[in-house]
Length: 121
Image (cartoon, rainbow, N blue to C red; front, top):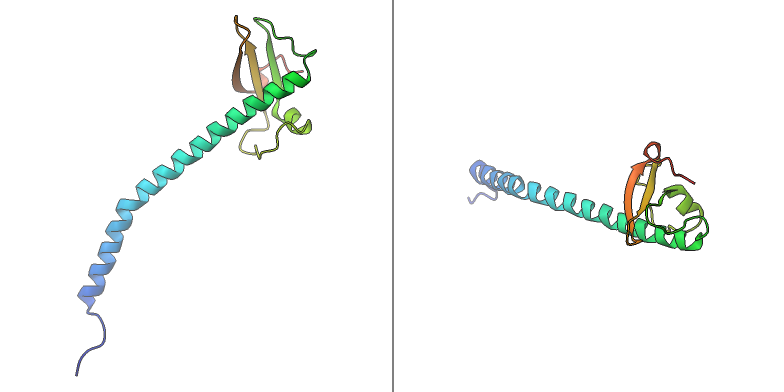
């Protein structure tokens, strides 16, 4: 009579191979996931800075573009003005966009806590 099944050795070999495979694949998958999350955050930062430009354009009288000027704009203000339409929940509610104007009248952006920015309007 022929046995219809696998031996214990065969089952253990398959389990061992699957375990080894998961040990090799899992760190790479986690590394890729971390990298993509970081890229997503950086892209959201770029969108945030771009939309901050729009906000400044809409409020030119309040934000004169002159060398040495510093502005701080709350992320919530951008949401309230319907400037941001993307989910920015991964940014801290206490963060503001700090914009400095350099000598060439170009904007320099930083995300800082509101306590670090005294120029909030």
